[in-house]
Image (cartoon, rainbow, N blue to C red; front, side, top):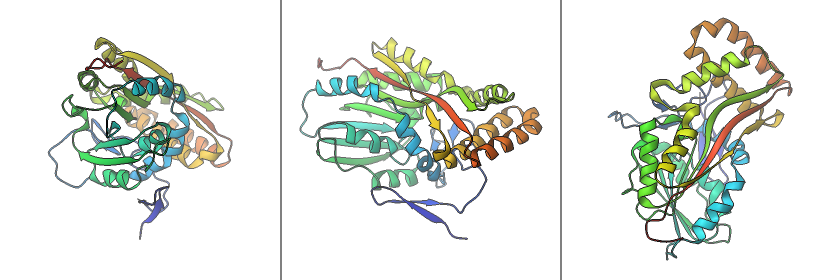
Length: 324
């Protein structure tokens, strides 16, 4: 059986497995503590090639783009405009870049030449992020990229030296308190702002309401906190960590709003959401099977709408060189 492929807007292709009603890796429970199937955070010493599923990132990219908070861009632009002029333009580090969706969203919304440094543990995802990277900024200036494979949970201020901005998507909730503290310290040490988007907030609204909604949500949130990961507590912890380093922090909601036009994403999200809840609380399994079937039927009929709450965080760290 062969794989099909999805073509990105920049001509790269991301293999997509044949149609299946199983949950796409990345949408469901992590294979081991501290990992999502789309993002290996820690160096486990395992040299096996990483074979995670980029199609989950591809599937969620339009919803992510629609959800990110535009209101955080104006204060970010002001900070970037006040940076000392560089001949090579802005240097932006995207931590846990996946297939590069943050760059495709943000680069065309910022003026000036940009050089993006894409960090991830997965060389497969890094390849697609580079191939599908944006080529021009909002004002037509050139955008370039480089990739760095490494442990994105251990970024240091030395690694960020010269950075104009640090970005990440769906990253904070799969870090520990210590790792979020280290990220805040690294950004503060480099004197660069951080735009950290789409962290799970732990709240879901589905139509029509169902008696199991609350239990599934609570079990899912508990699953997100496994192994000391922050899950839905991540943005609060990150805000405190950045504030301790003197940063000005703003948090805005960035909800997915899923309707009939996002049925494929909604189906995969539902399977992963319920699957993680059942993995956390196996006693839910018998009731959750019927719940999931009912929700999937409503999704297929175009009757289900979901609001999956996320949060975006902008931390304006104090510049280290006296810039405004």
